[in-house]
Amino acid sequence: MNLPNPLRSDEWPQSIRLIAWATLASLALVAIMAGLGVVTTFISAQGPLLYALAGGWLLAALADAPIDRLVARGWTRTRAAVLVWIAGAIPVIVIAIELAIAFAQSLGGIIAGPEPTSAEVGVMVGRLSALLASVGLDVDLVPLATTAILAIRDVAASVQSNIAAIAAGAIGALGPLILAIGIGVILSANPAHLDSVDQIATRGRVRSAQRSRKILETIIARFIGRHVALGFVYGLVVFVGATIAGADGLLAAVLGGIVMAIPSIGQGAAVLPPLALSILAAGPYVLPGSVVIIVGWLLCATQLAPRLMNGVLRLSGTTVFIAGSIGGLVGGVLGAIFALPVVAAVAAIRRDELPARAKTVKRAAKSKRR
Image (cartoon, rainbow, N blue to C red):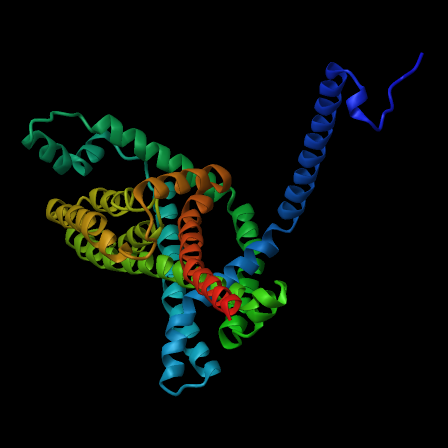
């Protein structure tokens, strides 16, 4: 029996060739999936380090603009970096301390205090029930509020019982955070260190790599910085409204501002924390305070946010939706947040490369004519 030459596929029958190609494709797919599994395992194992590197780079990108302004006024790069980092650290430390104290007090009060009676819950939601009744909605909020309060007590008790594990996790997260801050400070004081990363590219494309990185840094810094500004403005409005309502104005402002500053997903939910604190405070002016919070939220979400974001991404609505959806599916919340500036940076880099290519083509055409 004469078998065809195995090295010459044209001598084999069509069915055998199809089976062979299907087998090769299956083996290739298995190899690719195995390789992806190895890469995923490596990334998961080195996750804290990668997060620290990315976080340090992002922090340095955010600090670049004010540092460059100070350097332009005659400051040394090191002094400007130290001043900007200290100025940025002070509000973060104040916010962290305020949140820690507020949550500690809230946990103690919720757990140690007696379970509220139906009459006490009715007093807490009385003004909200009256407001709904004034617009024709007769809803008994006491059962809903009682269920919510009991759920909060259960969650608070669970947090208190696992406080040691939570503290251990927080301490474990301090390592990557400290590393990210250190990397950010070093890159802010010595931006030339990033040029060594660009040297990985070929010699002829180093300038292109530096230009692309600068575009990406600028877009991400503007994207995050303007969301922080949006959260700050909303926090000021919430502070006024929550104070009028008789709630802890600083805590409400911090929670509302942080949620509002979360890109892509925070603007819709930013009204909930301060409004809940105002309603639970049950002060004499909870209604006007809540109105201030709701009006401020509407203005920030519908008027201020589009104006702040105008010209930052330069993406169509369809692109924003697709990029946010894919980013959320691939990377969760962080993927949904950072997919937009990354896609916008890629689009900006493409727009920046087109004129450069056109100039190169024109120069080549002129040299050929000569």
